[in-house]
Length: 212
Image 1: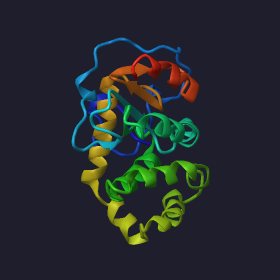
Image 2: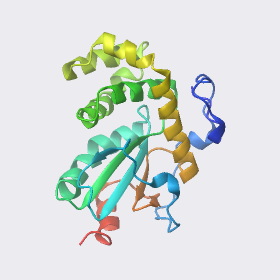
Image 3: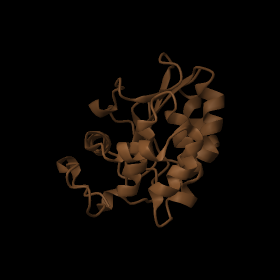
Image 4: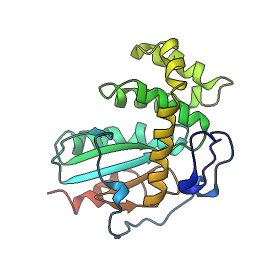
């Protein structure tokens, strides 16, 4: 498990315990109307889906081992993409918030797949999460699944040995913590944290006020 001690976490201390802030818990169905923190600015390193000029930006912080994140990606995101992203109304950004070392390693593999394949790879990761995340050798099992995407065992070994990449992913989590993320998945809609249900119907209601 990751040692997650706020902004003091360093990638050299990968093994440890997840802090209580990373636990999943119910949250009130509201959008907090606070000023968007600097950590929510879009950067060239972000993985972006959709029109850069879309009137609405949704940033998701998620962990590759989080079952609720997998549910969002398999049940909600495809419809969200079809209705809002593909039509140019919403720009969707995915950011890593690993809850444990397995999630960190899966995030490294996704990053190594390249920007063109990134969203396809994380889709496979979330759709097959129940099979690989609970196995005795999660990365080996995930590697078998990702061979269809052209990711080889050698690719995975090289990727997992990249400590600079691991540090960057941990840094992304730290940025999420500074922005107020304390559970996964967390969505920010135009800089405002969405703490409500993540169903299509709930997001339809939230986006109706922002999308013309």
